[in-house]
Image (cartoon, rainbow, N blue to C red; front, side, top):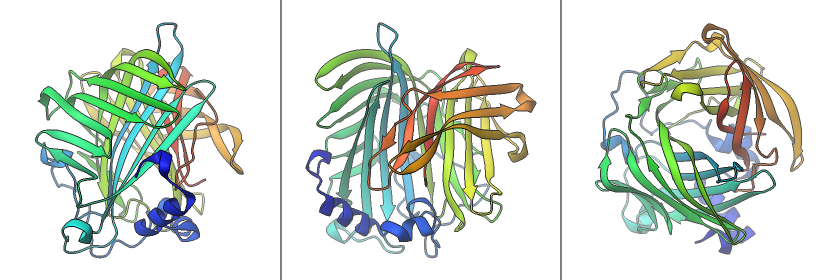
Length: 361
């Protein structure tokens, strides 16, 4: 089922298959991710991540994603963003059936952003019938014709080189991703805590990708280069029942350092913060929640919602105090579970570019 052929009925049907429909989802956090995880595999500290196995799917866990964002520029210095995401969701815990009997659902999101436009597309597929999936040797993640594929000399430690492509009625792109450094573990050696009550995920990233390729927007081809960041995360209950969504940054700092930050919003206002400072040589150091300050400064009205599209971010222990601005404040993903996702730039003690994702608004 391609994004261009999706009807309102098929979107609602796909959401129902995911078991995350409508008001129930938002009553239990963004997209139902705060639901009880009984029967699914638990995320526990101390479990080592291994590769290439952890590049592949984990059907015993309820949800996971392969998530790529890219900050790109053309020859004239115009900025763009590109997103490629594959989600796997298990509708039920327990034994895995074959073919149409599998409880696995796959969903793909893709987007291209410029200063004046934001184009988004969505795909759904049922697991077990080869419409979507991930293999580790050779590495390939796909849903219909959208693909993330390992190229010759692919290295499991760096998840590179890769070819990434997606297309819809309004846009398409093909990007080559290269990385000279290994992937990094987020949280504490890949164990990423989401609350003080036990919610967590396994989480690693490749923040060092260089990107080159072609975007096509409304029929116009644009050669681009830039930086890209891939997140891999899997869990069975990544949110607590009283957490409504998150605000997440991936930032490319000067001298090739990287910064990942998120704020999980709680109904009582006692939000949970986490992050990792990643040095240029690949050392990933977890930040204490109390060391992170993320404060919205500009609100934008989008689709009947007030979205915080500009922020002040401070980490005093690292001498970081920056202000972020979106490339396009209206980077709203008009997908079955809508959210804001787009490229940002920042200035202050440090300057650079990155991506911001905000869910549950």
